[in-house]
Image (cartoon, rainbow, N blue to C red; front, side, top):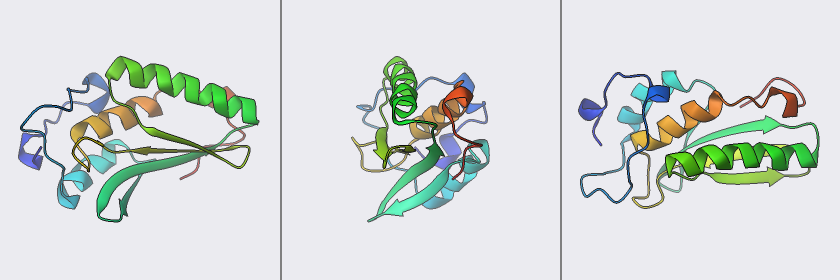
Amino acid sequence: MSASRISLTRLTDKKCVPCNLKELRPMNEDSAQTLMPQVPEWNLVNDAGIWKLRRSWTVKTFSKGLNFFRIVAGLAESEGHHPDLHLVGWNNVIIEIWTHAIGGLTENDFILAAKIDKLDVVDLLRRKPCD
């Protein structure tokens, strides 16, 4: 989806669209940068030529990390868009989001990131979220 087709509606007010739409194309870096201000806690990363969103949190315990994943999984299921979830060590949660079906970022990824940011997970975190 090109930057010109991305509306200015708040991402959290949108719903992810099916990833099998023929017109769905990966964003270029410039298009992705236009949406980054709406997900300021996330990092835009180029992973071997694939643009992704990445964010990390430190949770209080291993079990709290699994609870964190359950909460994110519920959101992902409701949106029909699924991030990669990593529990590194015993308390470091990392989420990577990109549209696997097209090998890059779409507006769906930003919608999901913005909605993840709104989840009530503060009681699971060891301290303030970090990048």
